[in-house]
Length: 208
Image 1 (tube, helix red, strand yellow):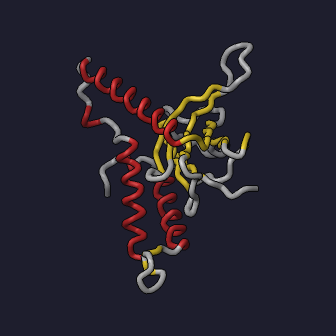
Image 2 (tube, one colour):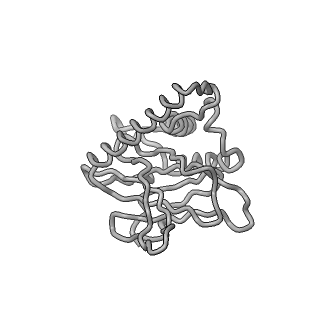
């Protein structure tokens, strides 16, 4: 099997790196469901490039929420574009719904042209802003209780990693670049994953 490219963390559940299915060399499907004995649900997922992975030049990863056919005669699954990750934005958090249902949640990741992915990300961002402005004009004054944006959550993950890993950095040689041992990253991930599993909403609160 080819080297995994992406990591997925459903809030409160373990990290997933192996796709359930790979329809093509550039597209991957990840089926997410808690074990039968686990009653936890999730409404957000973190998607990130695994350490050492570099996408081909000029490409980015488009993230989709895939849903099975819902009408009679429909045979093709439906997909909803959530956003993207790639060079300069190696991780992001996506809201996929109000909680896990009885059927597995399926995420699709496709390596596509970076400019196309970027344009679609801007469309999603513009649409989200329009919804916020519409709610505001209707008198919705709940800014103090709104959840932080995807960008803020991603920044908090990166800040959490930086704070932990900065003490492990060292030089690869005289005048060489600063490096961090892979074991240090693995240790951060083990602790970060444990924190998410025990308190899935801690990133939604102010940075600690």
